[in-house]
Image (cartoon, rainbow, N blue to C red; front, side):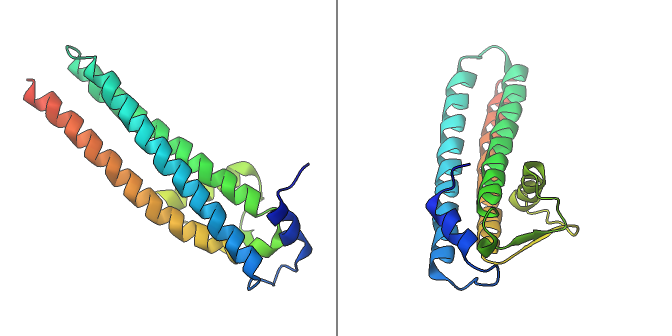
Length: 163
C-alpha cells in the first residue's frame, strides 16, 4: 500500500511524540482539506438541489421529500469524508489513537457521525493530535447542519405559500 509522506513520517515517530510540528501540521492540513471538500460539496449539492426542485413546480410534496433526502445524503457523504480522514491519519501512531474501537473504516465513520452531529460518544474516544480534527469536525457539522436547516425551511416556506 502506498502511504502519503506525512503518514510515513508519522509511522517513524514514536506514538507519544505528539508535539512534533510535522505531525501537528499534517493534522491541520488534512483537516483543512476535509473542511473545504465538505463545504464545497454541500454548496454544490444545495445549489443543484435548488435548481432541480424549482423544476418540480406542480409537485409540492415531492419537492419537500426530495429536499430532505438530498440534504440527508449530502450529510452522510460528509460524514464519510471525515471518516476516511480518521482512517488515513490513524495509520500513523504519532497522530493519536482511537480507544474503544476495533479500528475499521466503519468504526471511524461512527466516530465521525457522532462528532459531526455533535452527539458525542461515551464508548469511544480519540487521543493525540487527531483531536483537533474531531473538534473542528464538530464545528463544521454544526454549521453545515444549520445551513441545511435553513435550506429546508425555505423550501417548506415555498410549500406553505403555494397552498
